Structures are given as C-alpha cells and as structure tokens.
Amino acid sequence: MIQSGSPAPKLSEAAAGTLPLLACIVLSAMLMVADHRGELSPKVRAALSTAVEPVWRLAALPATLWRWAGTALSRQDALADDNIALRRELQLRDAQLARLEAVARENQRLRALLDGKGDFRLAVQMAGIVDVDLDPWRQRVRLDRGSAEGVEVGQAVIDAGGMLGQVIQVSEHGATALLLTDASHSVPVQVVRTGLRLMAVGTGRSDSLSVPNIPRSADVREGDLLVTSGIGGRFPAGFAVGTVRSVGPDDTRLFLVAEAAPAAQLDRGLEVLLVMRGEIDVDIGPPESAP
Image (cartoon, rainbow, N blue to C red; front, side):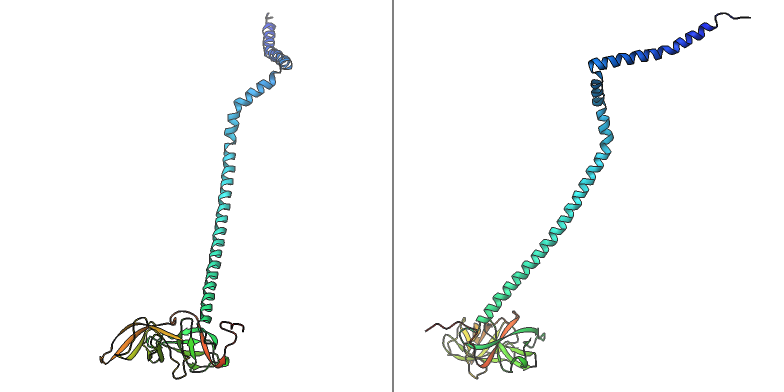
C-alpha cells in the first residue's frame, strides 16, 4: 500500500530548520550594515565595557590587595631597619660624646693639677694612682712611678687642692704614698691669718684632720686656712693642708683642738704630683716677665 502525503512533513521540517539560520544571516547583515553606516560597534563596546568594569575591578581586587600588603610590609621592614640603624648611630654618638666629656674633664683636672703647685717653682713629676688600700684603718694609695723614675722615700705628694701625703715605700716601678688623713701621719702646719705654727694629724677618715694641743690663748677660728710651714724639711712650705671647720676644748680642758677639712681631693682624682728635691722647675709654671 502506498501512503500519500509522507514527503510533505519532511519538507516542512527542513524549512523550519533553515529559518533560524536565515534569520541569523539576515540579522548579521543588518548589524553589519548598521555598524558600517552608524558606527554601532564602538558604542556597544563602550556600553559593555562600562557595564563589565565593576566585575573587572572585583576580579582584580585580590591582586591589588596583595600588592598593597606587600608594599606596606616592605616599607614597614625598611622603616624598622632604618630605626635600628638610627638607634645604633645615636648610641654611638652618645658614647663618643660621653668619651669627649670625660676627656674634657680629665683635661681640666690635669690643668688644675699642674696649677696646684702655684708659684713655688718646684720640680714635680706626675704619677697615676693605680690602687687604693681598702683597709679602713689605713689611708694609702699605690702610685705607678718608682725608683726607676727617680721617686724617693719621703717625697711630698700634692694634687690640685694642696698637700696629699708623702711617699713611704718605693719599688722599681711603683711607690706607696701615705695620705695626710692616716692616723699615723702628721704634718707641721701654719695658720695663714695669724702665722701660728701647729701640727695637723690624721684621723683615719678621708674627710677630716685634727689639730690638737692648741693653746687656749691662741687665735684660731673657723674658716682659717692651714698651710705647710716647711719645718723639718719634709714638706715644702706654703702648700694648702686644710680649712678649720670647728674649734673646741679637748678632753683635758687644758688645750683646744680643731677639726679641719683636707684641702686635697683625697677620695677623688687619678693623678698626683710628686715634688722633686734639689731641682728648679723651668718648664712648668707661670712664665717670667721680660726685663
């Protein structure tokens, strides 16, 4: 049996399948003509770019944040390194400044030390204090000059303030000096104001001297300056020994006793002067005026 009308559905199906293709072709042709005549594609592309720009920014946000974080961290590390370097440089400058201040103070101390001998025109030798006797009952210091440098037992030791003591022991390259404040030490003194000759003895304390056996009729007052009298030849005359702080009766009530503050810096300073014997100093001291 032959069935009629069967090819018709196949043709309609084929035509229906080609219609969308034809429509796309016609639409493309129309868009091409419109783009050619009216420059439609740049406008559409601009509109699409404006619409898609937030999406691009959102997609690029992680990379932007990463770069910003890396830059911030690197800058922070650089600032930290610069801060450490500046701190170290500041500490170095502080240390150098402190050293310069120490050198300046030492220079002033040495100048005062050289001026301590006044106008006596005595030969002196500078010595350094290398050790201090820690025995509380003895007032002694160790010097870095000895017999090899011409130091002798009995030499007077002075500093910028005045009389400090005397040398009692000498080795080849060292010497021991007994300070004025040692309980076993005594030095002939004279009151500058009145010329009264007395004897100052040590008390065992670095801040005090005792002047015993003062006649009750003697004129000794608080504030009087005591200097070496030169009697006995051990200590040159005229060096400051101390200043009277108080005067009162002794235990026997027959004499007066005075307490004096030492003129020398017994517990400070690192340099002293040894007074040489039998020589005239021509290099240190105030210059003589021309005739």
